[in-house]
Length: 257
Length: 119
Length: 85
Image (cartoon, each protein chain N blue to C red):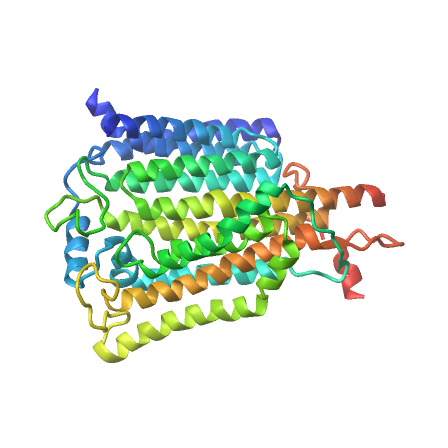
């Protein structure tokens, strides 16, 4: 199919999509209306379990099974990326000198590195009472660790980021999540029931299992993002192709020999 | 006027999704296509949050300023969006790893040159 | 509030068009980062701080970094492929 035919097909498809979207959207209630039945139910259920952050309650208390599915997607895709980006026989590590970085950048990253780590832990721990939770705190922590890379200290980053530790943490996060769900099943008859005492609205120790599930997801998310970025950093910075004397067109043939 | 304004966020969200699709269709570089897919997904976040918004509503975090009777925006769509953002980053990284593998094996990342299934 | 949200929506739409029509992926990483920041501001205006936090960390820091690293690796592969020929 030539490019011209594809473009014509694209225009036809777009027109059809626009028509269908317009018809569908015109049936929606107008933007900013007052009728939100799910909101009323979710807020009432969250206040019953003394969780101030309703979004965290929806994620880890009311829809915990779906969050478990999403965490599994995350872990599975990290396994896929790790398999795709592993160094093959044709690649070798190279000794790279540290790239010269401006002094102001180094100073800023040295200042912001501990601050970002603390903010990440704070966002993760206070997931039930302020905006935050496992997902957000996890990505903030992982990004904070990679400030070392921005500051030009890639060797230090490699040493501070032992990959086996992070692989274990990722698996541990998933297993703890499952364990809390199974405990809810054992105690109360439904998976992911909020079985711990809920405490008072707005206190740090409140909302029962939401904080624990949020911590487990945070562990898994930090490890996942660090492993993902480690795969890409390795490929782009540390590995290089070994030039062959007789060049094969397909590396798989050579690996099979 | 306000009737049109009532559907403007949905139209913008649909436009972002269609822009992403157009970008994938006309791209000449697979990495560009992956980034356009990411833009397409962001259109769905805008759509979800637009569905849940209420004029005069505040963020659904209860505390000293937001009491039980204060109108809040819909928390369910926010929960859907925020887990989706993290998961889509993982899927994007998987697609990028696939593109790197394609570059290693075929030497090109132009979708027009990659048409035949080879080896 | 309605004006702020409308303006932000328009800016986000323009940002999406800029990202899609930037051809070179190395430049697209930068525009993707700024598009992520614009989206975060929109999410704050729509009273969704959790989503804004998530989008800020992921869409502005993690994904553009991965795109840049992938682009760098692919251009290194193309260079070594051209030298060997």
